Image (tube, rainbow, N blue to C red; front, side):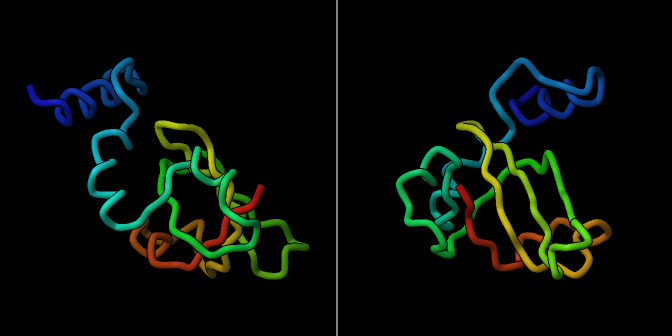
Amino acid sequence: MNHEERLVADFHGTGLTVGPHPMAYRRAWLNAMGIRRASELRDIPSGKRLRIGGCVITRQRPGTAKGFVFISLEDETGVANAASVVKNAFTSPRSSLARSSSSHRR
């Protein structure tokens, strides 16, 4: 069984894994695409647009947010919070969210 097959089996069987974080398996590709780690965000000026990636752990769309969706993404280095304008963040496939423009927040 390769690493990804083991990860899938872990999640299927127990809902979690004791191995590396799922994003660690794709880190080389993410770096090549210019997608930042959560741990890098503290060194980037507030308000700068950038690309982040991770497993979605929270999505919020408050009624007072004027169309913004707040998303928390977890990678192997921590949690990144993003604010994005996504019309259908709760029903759209991941690829749509990946194409939306996001900016980081501290």
